Image (cartoon, rainbow over all chains, first blue to last red; front, top):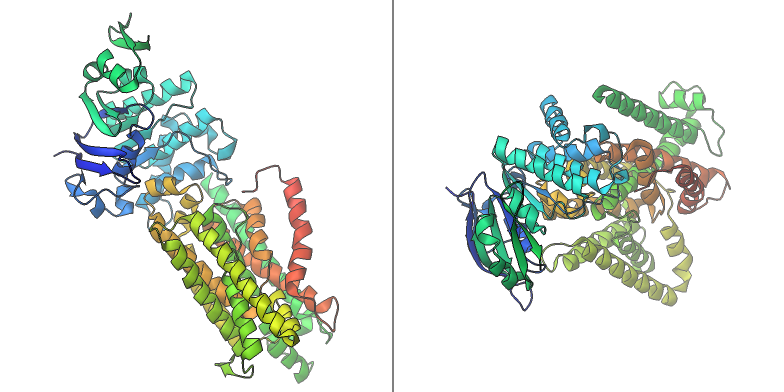
Length: 257
Length: 340
């Protein structure tokens, strides 16, 4: 059975379609990238999958059931979210923030158990943020903050992790560390990763599958090899690309002409 | 680490309880009839040898007033905490949604047109009308904000502000045509705890307990919401449902507070900030701690209000701002951390 099954997803909040007749499936355990220019509908697609926006009935299915039949709390046990950046004005500590990842598992007024504490600690160690635990969240650098929010998503312990341009604001080392963490979660723990990415080379390097959106339409889908062709890219982005063989990995990389 | 945190929380809790007990002791022994703390205590425990007059003063005058002011202080602090967390807005206070203006209009109408001698189960006509005005305003504001489906935070705050201004305008116009009632209405809006009865205390206690528990059940959702709505939704919080329940519960609590005491400003805004600075932002602690701190603060303010210029009384709303303001400014100045 498909993990996520989308059949004919349309979204037209104003006079124009943002998403047009998108049909596709996502299988469990995939590391799938969603790419496309600004305004092509990437984030809108994610927001439907997360049900921040309600799709039409029976259009979007999760584990075979209409996503609209899920309660919010049970969705919180299915998928977690790592946005581009997070600003929190209130003076929560890093530890408080990561502990919020356990909300979907806790009843009202129920205290956190030793198991919750262990899960939080492990998640923070996975993203190298345990040493930040007593700091106030808003004092962190952008890179540290993203490590912490990634730890929160990991502490949420969901089969699906949704990344919305997770590395756009990060320096190159933090970019690599975050993507490597996600890769390990995908390979070692079978997490399904769905990531909106702007960096096509990053997408080519980490994703096993890509979806290319263009003006709200699913333009191409397949392996990075199949999707990231100079023809597809020039059609969608409106500029020409060189596709070169990587000198050490024998994969390919792209540079604009 | 966890045990350290628990111990710290317990110490903070005990300090707040001590503060509350001390404020009650100070208040009960302050007033025109000179009574020491010790005599008052003996009288409360029924072992008084000071005579029946003191017993009456304490049981029928001072204690109901102390309890009522404490409960209102707790109620305002609880709702202020909730609104600040929910709207992610450090300027949110219990009066932000116009509930208090509705209460004021209700009270004004009662004073102008009403038979002020009418009572219902020991609660005065003015308080009843104020409560009705507040509840109608909640329904009205909530109805406006809900159109469009998602109950957006910006929408509800704007709707509250607009309705509040409209109601204040209506009150002003009513005043112009009823100049002989201006003073009475004006003093009502400044807030006061004079003329308290045990019935009002019971009424308020029911609201603080029920609404306070109702808010506390949502402490985790409130934590998540105060870090952003979309993040809260991704953490499995039903943001729309949570907003509905929290807004209605907190507003109802404000309605009860305002109807028995008038519009007391400042404490509902500042007490949550002070407690957030001193004990941290987690709502599991912040809600009960704000309630305790708000109660102690209001009791002290009301004691000042009735003692400083005795036999006349200062409006308690003025005292809250005069005492709380400087303390808050000192805290702001000394606290290097961000406030909210």
